[in-house]
Amino acid sequence: MKIPVAYVFRNLWTRKLTTLLTAGGMALVVFVFAAVLMLDAGLKKTLVSTGSYENAVLLRPAAQTEIQSAVYRDQASLVETLPEVARDETATPLVSKETIVLIAIPKRGSHKPANLVVRGMPAMGVRLRPQVKVIDGRMFRPGSSEVVVGRAIAEAFDGTGIGEKLRFAGREWTIVGSFDGGKSGFDSEIWGDVEQMLQAFRRSAYSSVLVRLSGADRFEAFKARVAADQRLILEVKQEPLFYQEQSKSLSTFISYLGVALSVIFSIGAMIGAMITMYASVANRTGEIGTLRALGFRRSSILAAFLAESLLLALVGGVMGLGLASFLQAFTITTMNWQSFSQLAFGFHLTPSIVASTLAFSLAMGLVGGFLPSLRAARLEIVDSLRAA
Image 1: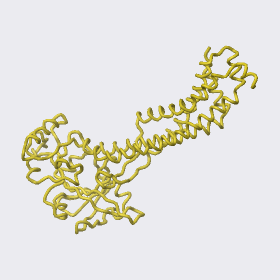
Image 2 (image 1 turned 135 degrees about the horizontal axis):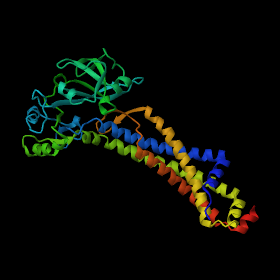
Image 3 (image 1 turned 180 degrees about the vertical axis):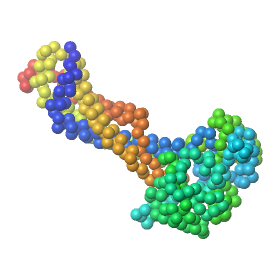
Image 4 (image 1 turned 180 degrees about the horizontal axis):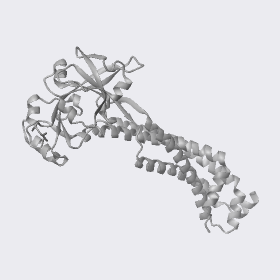
């Protein structure tokens, strides 16, 4: 005979305080586990959403970031002539020649400076990023010493309000607007005119060239054409994949740290679940003997107590996920070790994270409840009834 599922629910409900405390301990572990996964997912979402698969980024070979790259003017001009490059109604190639530099600005409420990305671009660069919307003020005018700042910078750094001036490269730059990059990496950048940036920083080469292809399926042909042209010693990457690579070091660190913390905390949670289940077995010895006397098999006793532990873990998992879901309202600003600049990103909860988190909580329940369940199943009828 099989023990009814209602029996498992009643036992947990009878011991409300113990159930709540044990589930709460598991919920905290699940919260940490889910938070780390959400943080990593938020980082990847931020950087992947920064680009479009119809865009290609051209860099100096072996350059891991735009800051390390250099694209000469004749190379950039030659790229505009390639047949895979899309053109607008006036036959203008959809190509943006850009330069990237780092500047240091103190964060709000702190005297410590943080590195920020300054991106010089032509008007075409704004057109190639339709996800970016000006939310306050206006876009910078080409040929002027005007800049616009990303939403994350405007919220977190001093001196970045509209009308204020930033001083770098021996010149003052007037902030004329702020923009929303759609929760992408652009939210952590400052934009201005590329030619003005090149003059101010005394540079003769661009950092990168952004190209809109006539279709995402033309990428391989475009890449092969660039590789075959000896005048273009450049590396070609699809824009989302390029930005995803920028998160590799930080993503790896978050993942390893999260796994280490989750393993340490889960050991404590499993021990707590094990103690709870052992106590439950000790308090219900007579009850177990009665069930065996009524004809319930050892396997049914094992399954019932194991189901009780799994249900306890599931309750903790749901509680932990519920708490973790509120983290999506927060944004974190930290150093991107790949580019050595500040990057703002948030927590992102996905269906795969929900599934992984619940599986993790059930695994804790299975490991923590197996030995107590096995002990309950091995109790002899006579000894159980005598102990009662």
